[in-house]
Each structure stands twice: as C-alpha cells, then as structure tokens.
Image (cartoon, rainbow, N blue to C red; front, top):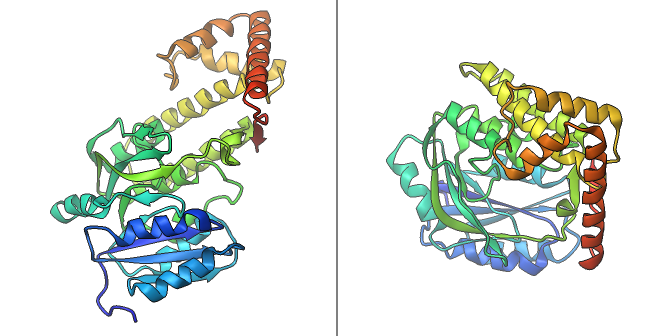
Length: 338
C-alpha cells in the first residue's frame, strides 16, 4: 500500500549486484530519525539476489518502492528514480553505502529554514575511516558553488547531498555515455547551474564504502579522456546564466592542464616528445595558476620540465618505483580509460 500524501524527501538507491551490502544500506535508511520520506530502489538489471532483496523490503515497509529495469548503468538508474520520485527533496544513496541515523534530519533542517536549493554534508570512508569534509563551508551562490565544485573545494560526488527536485532536468542525466569517471562532478555542475543558493556543512552523515581494488580505482584517465571531460564542463558553463564566463573557462583550463601534467608521469603513458613539448609550453604560461602550483610535487615537476633529459630520467625513475610497489603489494598495473 502506497501513502497518498507525498513525502518530503525521496531517497533514490541505484542497485546492481550488491546483495552483500544491500540490506545494511536499506536498514540505515529506514531507521532514520526523520521519518517523512520514501525510498525508491532501482534494480538496474542485477543478476544476483539484489532484486529479490528489494522486493522483500517493498512488502515490509510501505515507504519503499522498487523499480526493475535492464542494466544501463548508475546514471540511468538515478534518472529512473528521479522520474518516479514524489518528494520535494531528492537524495541519492549507493547500495553498498549507509546513512548515519541523523542524516536526513541534518540535511532537511537547513532546507526548511532557508531558501537553499542544495545542501551538501560531508562523508566518511569505510573501512578506512577517511573523512571527506568540504574545504568550502557555508552559503554559496550559484557562481560560487560551480567554481567550488570545479576547484574541488566542494566534493563533486552525489553522496550526502539533498537536492531540490526542481533543479533537475533530463539533461542532468544526459552526458556522454563514455564518461565513466567523474559523472557525479558533471551532474553537480549541471544542476548547480540552476541553484539560487547552496549550503555546504561539515557534518559527517554518510559512510562511503571505499574499495581500493575496484575497477574504477584501478583506472587512470588518459589525456584524451581529460580533454573530453572538460569540454563537457565548458559546454555546461556556456549555457549557464552567470557573469564573467571567461574566468570560469580559465579555471577549467587550469584544472584540465593540472590533471594532464600529472598523467604524464604515470607508468601507463610512454614518453612522447610532442606531448612533452606541449606540457612544457603549458607550464611556462604564467597566466595559468595550475591547481597544484603550491605543492612540492608540482614545483618539482616545473623544475624537471625545464630539461628534456631530466624529464626522461625522472619519468623512468617513477615508473620503476611504481612497478616495484605494484609487485610488492600484488597489484595489477593501472589501466587507461579513454
């Protein structure tokens, strides 16, 4: 039986082959101190027991609904949940993660007090207990929020975030299907383009299951992928009503080139003279304040790039060190994602 009254919050949980953790995830949601919510479990074509677990909880709690669909990935599953949601507010929980008991209460309180379209709390890893607390805390305008996500001072994941449902569009889930790393960042920037005010808080309300051996953790973004990713970011900014877009474009270039420079020193990328010359030219541009400018590692990169022979030696040394480290920890070498 479904409640006739629309809930305040819709909790969307994309589910794919997560039977080992799914019950713990669902229990953490239904045990929230804030009670006026619905849960939409989106079974994205699981071939384990996840779908049956979803159906079982649907019979146990009237606030829970299940959608079964063919496997199309997490972005498609989130879109299905959004389309079926009835709440004014929307939040997403991954099926192998869990919410702390006060999570929804913590998020909905500022949402009910002020004119925010987005409230973003902080996250703790499991089992490593690492904390992800936004470096940018407080109230942010649309421009400030987008800049903060691009710069990484606001974490670009969807975890621990309460969204006004009205800021979503079909385009929020319509990015290039080849984007497999960073789609959460793109979604945050896209919906951020319709935010009036956002709020970042330091409260840790979400436990993220970190798996260092996951497929994504073993991938590194190829420069071609990085270029494509930031081209999409530029496209979003180009249709966003903000002032001083050139400042945004400059920041996007700074982030892009910073990532490309780090990629140059990965073991997966062979030394290429043309690529080296291009990066050397980038580093010499005094008008670019690259992301890692102040770090010791980046200062070392700047120095090394002055001398081609030193760059080759430095790169080979890093490659040998990483190869030994992978051998010692029995790790497979990281692979490029294009």
